[in-house]
Image (cartoon, rainbow, N blue to C red; front, side):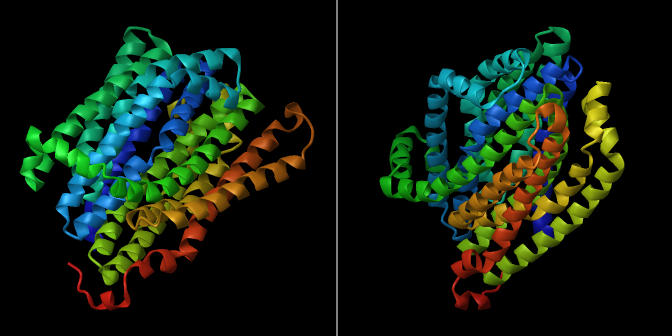
Amino acid sequence: MNRRILGLALPNIITNITVPLLGMVDMAIVGRLSASHIGAIAIGGQIFNLIYWNFGFLRMGTSGFTAQAYGAKNMDEAVRIVVRALSIAAFVALLLLVLQRPLSWLSLQIFKSTPEVIRLALVYFFVRIWAAPATLGLYAVKGWFIGMQNSRLPMWIAIFLNCVNIICSLLFVIVFHWGIGGVALGTVIAQYSGLAVGLFLLRRELRKIKPQVTISMRLMPLLKESLHWDELRRFFKVNGDIFLRTVCLATVFTFITAASGRISAEVLAIDALLMQFFTLFSYIMDGFAYAGESLVGRYIGARDLRNLKLTVRLLMAWGVLITTIFTVLYAFGGEWGLRIFSDKPEIIEGAKDYLFWILTIPVCGFAAFLFDGIYVGATASRTMLGSMVVATAFFFIVYYLGKSLFLGGVEDHGRMWNNILWASFMVYLLLRGLMQALFLKKSIYNQITSDAESVVGT
């Protein structure tokens, strides 16, 4: 089973690590321009996190449903799932493009900073928004491949996409001097390049499963079957919970960026750098979480309780090991990591005051990431939503209670307010994992009847 977990997790880790590495390259590029550019990337990136995270169900729901169809050996349903997900992704992307002006206005009501930071963030936003169709389409494609127990193809798509992005960003900023708009344009070009490769690979896999789906006369009936109301209702029932859960997730991360920006532009830049450590760890852990999605969904679909329980136990063991490694790395390499992201002495010195918090990220966060994968694979969305609501509520309770102890202005207590913000974030991460652990048996194991205990795993 460890070999099976690693076989799925390692390609996912390679896939995921390219994402923070890409963000780090963007941060390293603009970090040498000015603190305003760093803040603008932080705000611009968070705007798109706020938008795209809310549609993360296009990946998570797709992988969970597909994995269960794979486990049940229902390949017809597996094909309908990806057609359904891509159709919904196209509709949502069109809506985002039409509403880009209202979305930019709403974003400005949430994020506060200096006029220069806001101006640069808007430049970034109005270029990158045109990648919406490609970004959401890739969510669906990636989720389907993960559900089909194939994490290698998403890895190659991600490597190709991010190589294109890095090359374009460096070319547009360093050679053409297009500034933050060049970084955004590089992302747009890369996303469409990745989608083109993803759709090509998807078409090839679909021909293996069901050759007739490539015949034009078959596509319309397939689309009609995929968008049947009963199937859509089931899709949105599960994904509605995931959507609301993701709203909570986006709310917390949006609030962190907004709150640090209200303290000062310097604190906004500092927290943006520190969040790179969280992002790196989260994408490593998500590699194992995605393996959990594939395997948990597969064994639930196959009614294999023994291998389901074994998968969960081994995932937790791997989580403890990775947490230990990252805690040690951050303890000894935190300051060195800061210097990779920026060469501004005032920002690096300011960030040193908060390095303690990056040591708590792995310990507080690993269970939350892994249980997310387990619950997604089981499509146990209601428990995911409940745990996220509780954790989000405590995030705000801890923050505002802590901040109420220091009633002076930002000048007097800005540093303390930022420490309270990070403490609240750690409470939020810890509670997510604890809540899902408490409901593991009821929400996951009880999906399989007791007679499945005798089923021999493949």
